[in-house]
Length: 148
Length: 148
DNA sequence: CCCCTATAGTTGTACTTGCAACCAGATGCT
DNA sequence: AGCATCTGGTTGCAAGTACAACTATAGGGG
Image (tube, rainbow over all chains, first blue to last red; front, top):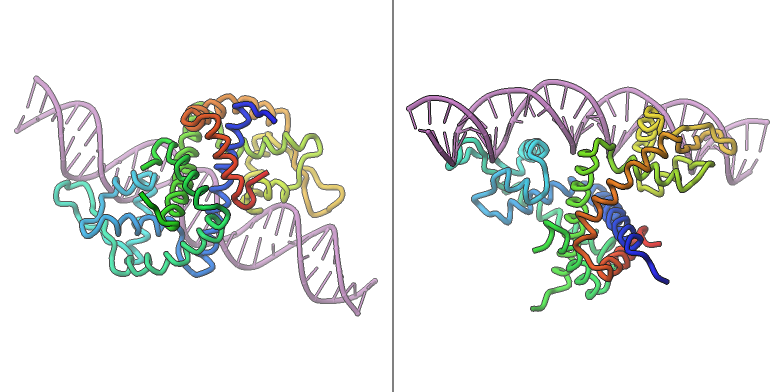
């Protein structure tokens, strides 16, 4: 049966929104069941870990994670309160802070990963072949700001 | 170059999360620029419109849109305050309400669609061929709770 | 050097979401 | 019928998010 371009578009769009929402909810639920903090925390810690000992400026983190600056400012506050990250004045720019992961943060990152990985496998990857996962990754990479 | 199953999985997962987040933000921004309410409102109105004159129970709406009941309860409150939907006591179940779209709601639905459609085209569909949109829709349909 | 504008980040406030406790009507068991 | 349990829906309160206004430093002319 033939589908119009419009129908094809709307189906793909609706499924993209729905799939993400559904998967995110399931994975978050698994993390919570294990007594772990939300995924956002993981994202931040992961980026900071990748950045190494020099850490990242908040605006870099915001660009990476698609978070607004006010949102991020308070998110970092929370992480800092838990001693998962630290902020230090930035030498080359007196306005900004440089955010780094702490040992406690690194530890949390490492404790979260197994649960996170298992949840991704269970709720997501399990339902696809390797070939399909590759296709999906390729296709989603075409969305502006996502690929590479 | 060879990629491990793990890498393939994580790439697809990360891109799915990122693509949805990015696209949703862009489309919401377009709606706001046109002085229109958030997408969630559209989703609710669309479902109610599909349901026709008998409307829907809140729990049906919640299942359809993956919204928790408390969340939905207050969302409907807001829509009702704007006279976009109405609630009426449910005959066959004294606990529940039946929610229906109003004429005002239908009007809003119709005013939102052109903007929404254009945003989907501009930010999403434009970057894919028809064949790719079909593939993407198919693949995302394999996620539990999404397909058909 | 001074002024203008732009950028990094924070904060007040309103709004939205999440959780847990709750109310009321339905269902089921004896 | 009588009681326990379940389900649909609401609500108080805590936590998170959005927007706008703000502070402070940076950078780019004149």
